[in-house]
Length: 227
Image (cartoon, rainbow, N blue to C red; front, side, top):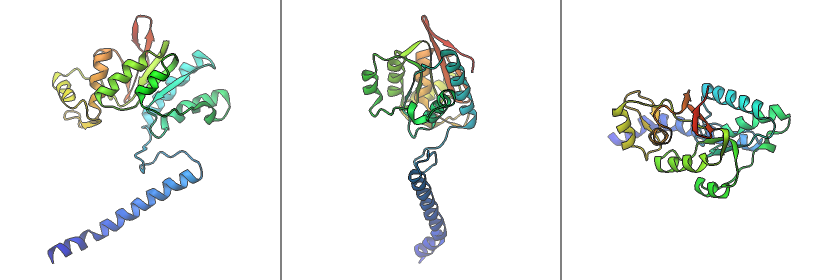
C-alpha cells in the first residue's frame, strides 16, 4: 500500500515531465521541418551565452576587416552548429550572400581531419571538440600547425587561467572528465581544457574573456590579443 501511495504521489510530476519531453520533441521536429537552426535543449544544443557571443563576434569582425575577403575559418567540433552560424553570419553580412555558401561540414574525428587538412592554412581556428585532456591537448598540437602566421587560435569553456596550486591539482585529478564542478568557484568547468591550455601556452599566455580564449600566432610563438 505504501509503494502504491508513493507512486500516486509522484504521478503528477511524471505527467508534467512527459508533457515537457513531448513539447521539446515537437519543438525540435518543427524546427527541422521548417529548416530553421535549432539551439534548444532537446539535443543539449544550448546556445552560447550572449556575453561570449559578443566577444566572438567582435573578434571575427575585426579580423575579417583586416584580412579582407579571403578569410578562412576552421571550427573543430561544431556540435549543433551555433558558433558555425555566427562565423558564417559575419561573413554573410560582409559579402551579402547566403550563409550556407560559407559553411562546409566535414565529418570525421579531429585526428582524422588534422591529417586530411595538414597542408591547409587558416586565418582563424576555433577548437571546441572533445574537452577531455588527452584529446584536447592533441587538438591544440595538431591544429595550431594549421594556423597562419598572424592568424588566431581560439576556443571556449575556459572561464579563467588559474594560478592556485590546489585548484591545479584538482583539475589534474579530473582532467579526463568532460566537465566537473569547481570546488572553489562553484561553477562547472572543463578541467582537461585548463590543464592542456596551461601546459601549451603557460599560465599567463592566453587572452580570456567571458569563457572565450584566443591567441595570435607569430613567428616566435603565440601572443595574447585584445578581447
